[in-house]
Length: 250
Length: 208
Image (cartoon, rainbow over all chains, first blue to last red):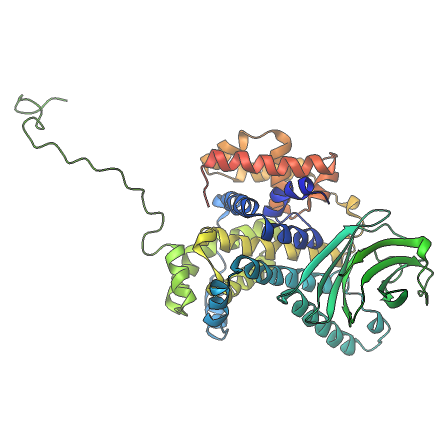
């Protein structure tokens, strides 16, 4: 995505009309662009005005239920808030916290909807195990996304769509996201971590899956992340003629 | 204007009123959402109750417009309001008004809900199957936006700008879906959303 492309996204972003990957990418851009952040705030305030006359009395029981819930819900501590304002890089920290919340919500939505593809878990039959695994994945994802050293790497896929990696060295993990990839029939996308000339499979995405998010654990000293198209069930070594995208981790 | 005594206007001979530079009208007198949210951030449940009463109809109304199901709108409102409570400590007045912040939270929740519903009905992989009769939606949205200023400003947009914005905001469509619904290239939709909102912002005199 070029700079002017991403800049033009402020309207769609303010309307919540972007997908999760674009949201993460754009929020990264906001961190670096004060005028864009200001524009987004103004457009969000503008958008809120569209709701001016939609006001509808909520069901009467809702008030008591919300009040009951908040009486049992701890607030984010002042310590957490104070850290943000004290930080020299307050803007950066704030973005990350914000991104963590919104992407976490997106991750939750993905988990409910498209299904988080988690390779080792994919064949776990017991639904309860799978749910627990997905919860663990989701919380690992949140940790990566909230990490102070989180970085977003992104690039277009060779045949369309986009590949995004949010990586954290401190968490030794990353969240890989594919969006809008072309359907590869009975083949599958496979993810790799590459160290020097050694490629280690991080798992396959599954037949027919063209979008989703997945946790990649153990970055170690890997220098490159890659996505290939492989035969059903995946391959031991990447087919370099079918390289969809590489992202440099260094 | 005639005076009963037929005399000169009363102001004559009276000390001239002291002129003072106009003060901007405070947007948020003590009990408005901004102040309430500051108190909520300090754990003030009474302030939260007042805030709820002030904003819940807007939050619920917006959620209902987007998810179009009262039970689901209720859930979205509940989640959003609890999130407001939980994250009030993070709200920064320098980053905009409390109402805008809060409606952003609610809208995103509503959109997430719509999209996961779409996903669970396997409509995510082929957005081309979206069959919403958009002109109906746009007409509905426009007619229900009664507030004159907003409507007047919306009418000042081009048709494409207006439709893109309303379809995205009230239907939770991604701009990709909007592009397909309106049969218009992606970059055009993206640009129309932005320049449409900018024109709307200027027309409404929104500042943040």
